Image 1: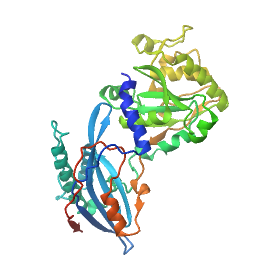
Image 2: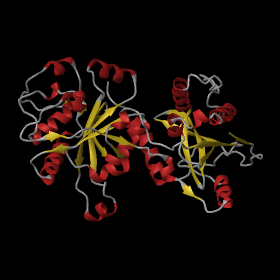
Image 3: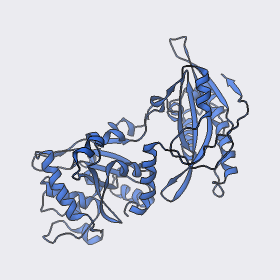
Image 4: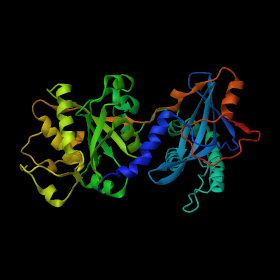
Length: 406
């Protein structure tokens, strides 16, 4: 197995660049919406929290060459408002967690079922939007569900509280400010074969790349600090270096989970950068290669490699840096070898730091807009919002909303 090809990632990278610019493509469909208010008393305080949530539209996005739909859930707390975009499968995950944690509550709403064919038709998407809105309304009308951690995470009120999230984390926007040449990015990608690979090797990750740099003008770096940072990978398109920021975003859009490990060694940053620049120039353009003979090899030979698989490429780069022994075959290193769990021992005083989760999400409440008056809120709710939008044009008229309180 190898990661998606460059041609497959092209659409994701273009979408990543479009999202970063925050541009709008196409009309925004704003279906009728329903306002749901929930009051949850906080222990030890007479104050209450009123949360209003409604699904205002759907939009079509792309996962490589496959289309999928996201629903925009508009959330309001007091004078703050923000939106979260959720796929149907995220509603499914929420429902499973809520049912498990609130098993004693018998009147939990039912989630609308799946449809395997015709699920991208405009009429079906509108019906599903209404059904999901009814589901969310029913959920928020139950105080125990409205104050459930899973529901609050889903609405963007809290950060992820899963076990994986307890690892040290870094926002993707910050990555390019802290990484340096020689650092590693580990990937847990989507698909059956990657899952089998992780199971066989008892690893969390199945792909790895190394951060490298390319010479850029001082002017470019002044306005784009990440302009000179690239990630060197070996995929089924061969060995290529990609702009770090957009490449990580593209992997994220493909469903991959990423972790950063930073290299610490006695060489200076400039020395590491120069060695990796030379290695990148020599290896870029070579083919992807993985076969049983490579995997069985334990000792390196003097014949220059003409093909690489992902972890083999990283191993050779580290051998060039003098932090891995040159007598060992680079093909004996797997993606799991570079994970924290494997306790890889580097030489010459070098070491890899702990894994840091790369996140592309933070509680949407951190990006909430604050309204001074109710008039501002109404104006905002009627305006187009979100990122790159690709939906069919539709009416923006809405009937008067219903209100329910608990």
